[in-house]
Image (cartoon, rainbow, N blue to C red; front, side, top):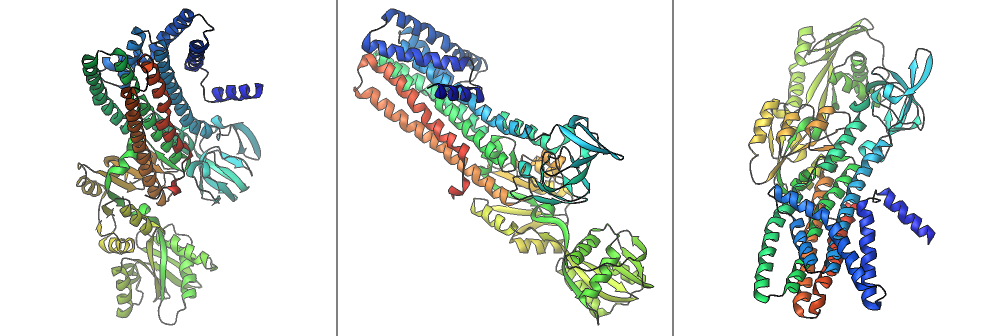
Length: 639
């Protein structure tokens, strides 16, 4: 027994329920139990029992009466108004047990609401626990331990196996596997080496790193994520407003109905019983509870939704406008093919290309170098490397010139190119590919085709979105028409627009705004900030580490994973499914309750007490239905 009591006390403390409401709940339950025991066994003087219940009921009614007064003052009708009327009439009729039941119900609702808030805060608290307090920085030949709050930008920080990274920064030395699941929801560790970006509070699971601090304190990704979760938890979902609108007409209807019933029957107990049965405070708790649970589920899986209204709005979306680069594609050039001319072998051309690209920062050069490294090509150190901005690169190897660049650059250098070779290059350009030509010793050796690669699962995601109710998917890009056409064909996208500046993308978006349906914009959040901000719902890809992404998106995907959009759409549909169930449950319990009231099965003298007890018990059915979203498994919902 003592153990059970201790566990109960820990539960109350864990969810911060050791409050006035918690004590009030215990007292209401105790005296209500005493009241019914006294009714059957008459072991306490009835007037004392009644007096205690009256005082307790009046005291417990103060919070709901206060809420009602404030709502009316703001010209707003809420469920509390109906509950207040039921309370006042119960007290005037000396129906102490009925008033106590109503208070017990409302107090339980307030506690459950507080529990819900605490549950959402625990996601934030769990993130806060990830923050390390001490870091080791390299100062010359010394290693100094300092508090994380004292780290400065540019400090070199050592992170060993099993330690959490204290800042956002760049790896400058060593290599390690890092668990980023706390921020992105990724199940597998990510390899980090020199030049890789790392994020605060992620864990080194193998190896060690030396990091140069870039973002510290409130600037780090973790801190921004915590801020987003707090805003999302505090944001009032639009469906709550729908519940308020429902309350406005529902309360007015029930008041008019109750007045008409009284004039028709002059039976005060019957009217009071009806009012007690139809109190809809369970809906006022169950609907927001469902959205808060869903926002928490999304955050745990690396999707930050800045408010329940954005989650709800996904159900009303029919149009998606998506940026191409970095969203539907990986945003990085990849070699697609290598063409060799004359007697040249592909591997020999690749050696030349890798050599001349080794010291260049151009995206094409990096792509070629990466392509060579993947194939184990060894590099030779070039001589006299010279880069011509926007045109190409030249280098000297074994006394002969290697050239890499565009067709015009080759002609400028006097490289011999046949009409047949030019035709081959132009054919690939017409297919929407970038081309990089390789010349050696005055002749054209071959050329590479490169492209920004389409994300592996992009086409499947777009098909899934169309099946989920999206009627139009539009791709926007600043690339030329040929590139746009090639990517659109790969993705099976029928509507696309090319050669667009950021303001052009915004103008195309505005064509779809202002209709009854919501418009979603998807972008990488850096050059698409205006697009994301202007849309009804902006979804930012790859939010981890990108400040503009975090600020501009209404929904932020912390990973570069398009499938998370589909998962979030499924979450929105399932949340709507649950909230509709809540209304159906509420309607059914009301019909049953009113049937009992008017059936005559309950003696008139017990009508108000029985009605309040019935309402109290059935209140928890829709609330429990919403609570199951805390143990959400979306794979079970395939609609």
